[in-house]
Amino acid sequence: MIRKEQIYEGKAKKVYSTDDPELLIVSYKDDATAFNGLKKGTIAGKGVINNKMSNLMMQYLEKKGVPTHFVEELSDRDTLVKKVSIVPLEVIVRNISAGSFSQRYGVDEGIVFDEPTIEFSYKNDELGDPLINEYHAKALKIATEKEIETIKKYAFKINDELKNFWKGCGITLVDFKLEFGKLSDGSIVLADEISPDTSRLWDSETGMKLDKDRFRRDLGGVKEAYGEVMKRLLENI
Ligand code: TMP
Image 1: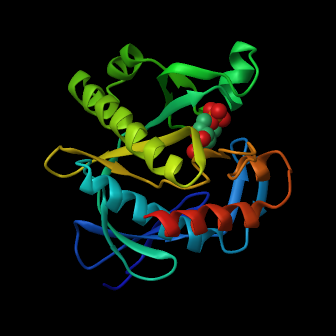
Image 2: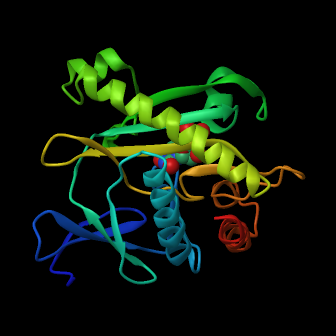
């Protein structure tokens, strides 16, 4: 499959059209940003790791019954995906308090919840991805009630599957962000990526952060943490 023209450049990925109007190529960059692009950097080799990891995770989830945009890994950084229209919601599932949850509600990080939580942000950089509830999403015609129900069902299923998978790798899945898209027939599939950029992953024994918080918080050892997660994933998949 040949890349035709670049149709979009995001913070961590570029998207290209292909000869097939139903397919796109996603190309993963080493660029990293945080705080809505205020903090910028690069993490050498991140694009290669995130591409491979996201593809393995999507294939794993497909086997468990979650439809995804994944079609085929083309190279270290490039993957063929189904063209979707992205539902402009960032879907965040949390098992343990951390990050903006801890800040917003004034609680320590590391509180294990009895049940996972879900929240939505309206994907809009100019507005700073504000939190949004289901009524607002319906009012703004971002998604229908049925689509929101499907997204919630998939998000919790993905949490169950990924929590279990990472546990086998000695990693605790703290929280993560998902994005969903609509195929031309209107069906909802998991899109975007699943990686240490979009998840919080803590070593189950030591609590060491093995994700993008190392970059966001200047903790050092960012590249090594991504490498460690990838190594454990490959040993367990
Ligand atoms: P938060 O605690 O900052 O809201 O982040 C929750 C999860 O979502 C965390 O695993 C990181 C991920 N995330 C993204 O993937 N993209 C984003 O823009 C933000 C803010 C968080």
